[in-house]
Figure (cartoon, rainbow, N blue to C red):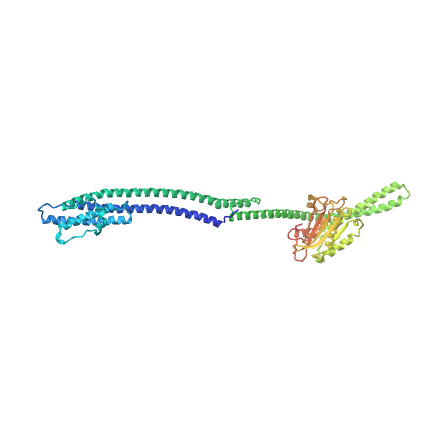
Length: 544
């Protein structure tokens, strides 16, 4: 696709504007020039007509003196001949100027021939009236050059009267010729006016077309993309991060729209991630409050119930001893039944006592003593201990550390965490199952990963896996406090713990992250201290 950058589009728009200006300027200049030429032509024609009028009047004031006229009449005629010559000279000058400048419809040769003929007659009359002054040359010495322009009625024996009559006849032809020439000039000016009007209207139509094209291009290249970008920004401001701007302008506007779409896509992903983090933090806060409440309740309940449970167990044991002595030699079936129920009372009493001890462990949050600990060695010690337990011998634990993974933790507390996670994983697996353990550094923290191929977990189980008294053990036993205690310990260490599973029957993975440097600042929570003596972080800990 050919791209039109904005600078190229601006050049096209500027070219249209310049073209409109040139067309308007050209039409205006042509119209003004035509008007100026017509004005000059008509003005020069009017001056020529004016000069011919004066010449006409001067010639018709001439008269032939009668026989025996006085000297005064001859001087008056001589004066009028000089005036006629002066008027002829003025007319000849205007005629030559118009003919030279092209301000006439024709070349002016006819008028020039009449002027030469009048010059010859006036010169001859002047020489006849004043023979003593010597021969007077004609006004236009080049008369012989224009001999072919002289009228055909020139006679071989011109007298004064004949010459005056010919002057009358010659000058009478000027108005007709000048009128025809003036009319031709008017016709030419009218043609120029029509042409100017056509050019002006054509220029106006062309400019309107170019203006319309410029408006369409401005709307398509600038206004419409800006409006679409504005609409997209408003949609994003309302929270519609999935809104896309589709621009195909082939310029920087399209690049901006594509960048905007990429930005909204990134914002949408970030928003969903933040929303998930907020939900996770909310669940952590709820879980923390529940743990605090359960711990507070467990401390009181375990303390109050331990004494009755001890009495029940002691009494059941004592009663078992006495009945075993008194029933000696009696009915074996009845004795077995009594012993069975007494043993059941003892076992359940000790089971309740074990639960109360775990409740006390859960509620008891002693100060932890952190030190630099090798997590790989700690895990290896727990694995070696577990492998000697008979019920776990058919299940495989795979742990092959590549290096020492150091963390700033309480080794006894973390050993309890590792033990709980390994036991839970082994109990979730079938015979010949495998538990894989890894220890490594990740994102500036020490990480332990426990991956089994056991029964797996559903999403609702994953969501509540760290809740107190929540359990999904396959044999149906368990208090549901092991993972809650594990979560509390990791929380105390300012670490993170998370569980994941692809579904039932596909195994589970527990991931624990712990700080490797003693850089965390602990903030004491007065409310939790007053109830449990628990020391917490200022912010909730996210579980991966």
